[in-house]
Image (cartoon, rainbow, N blue to C red; front, side, top):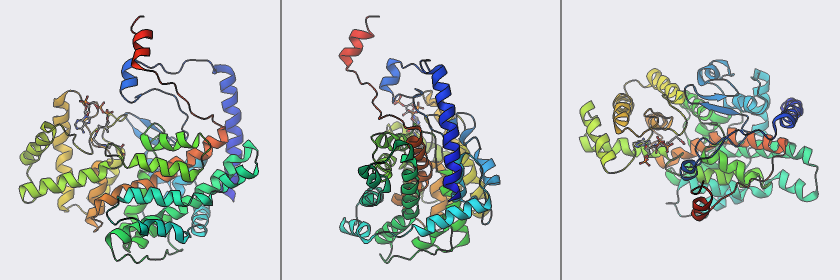
Length: 431
Ligand code: HAX
């Protein structure tokens, strides 16, 4: 595999670079923690290496330094939207892929798509009203016995080859995610008959195909969707969870399944479902597309109930999320007259001034979740509890490629220090 060779060279260089840096600055302070940060999600404390992406409050996410518009332009494509296979190459190696590199990853994934029956049995055994994300996480965990890293570790391997087995696990698992997700989708919402993958299709288009959506526009949407959600640096709940669990040398299956449990939360990946539910309730309330005044009234009603406006705000961003903008461009091109898109667009105008008026919201602008759902809904994928699964499939690219780097860097098991309120009172209150 050329990918493995290139990555091996990059890793050797990067480890040397990191060592030299640590030799020089190892004891230098990077971040301090205030009492408020301890109580508010350790927000902003710099304490982790995450190579694939960085979120700039003003520019949004940068994947290995490339912005979303740059990626849409520079990554290899089938039609107009970038291929996630190319992004995976970039996330792992830091280099833009050639068409050949993408072809190699596409072929590797196609070879590894087969899912053992027991994973499907796990899904089938569960009640049909089980949350799709719970099924997704369980199915991933059920595959753990496939881990090549876990097997090799038990047999005894040197630390400097951990990353090679993690890379194999990564490709194995990423290849299978569309297959198990489509199986969950068809079991919960369609006739429960699985549609076999088409090895000629790319990873994203195959997902749409196996779900039952054979339409070039849906293929394009999936490519864009799976690229845009792939990574958002390391501190968000799912990424950090994956990194934390893997720091115990738990393999990719354990770590990514755990990450998905975090993604399922309403303040994280479930927000895309929350947005659609909220918009459809608004539409019902006003008996069709509301006007701007009604949208405003609905927003205040939500806020006065003590709820958040879903899809707005962000822990790091301070501008409209460029992923939102990319989806907006897609909607303007393919579905400018869609009713839900019109409401989404109205919210874009109405919500930021309202959130600014509240005075406490750090980022009054839309995040990716404010837009993603309406595109899926337009193509008939109306089962919005499933939307977080799409997010999860995509996030595998960012989280698991970092786990390969975690193993390459040989990071230690994570163990921050917790304290009691009494400790704080005694040690901080007295100073
Ligand atoms: N509506 C109403 N109030 C909001 C708000 C919103 N959309 N966003 C933030 N606030 C409130 C917070 O609840 C907080 O209020 P309290 O002090 O009373 O608790 C205050 O503004 C300050 O919060 P913040 O510093 O601006 O935001 P946080 O970093 O704490 O939280 C969140 C970031 C994304 C969790 C938050 O903006 C939110 O709840 N947004 C709505 C849900 C959402 O869209 N989540 C998806 C985010 C993207 C993502 O991770 N996707 O996976």
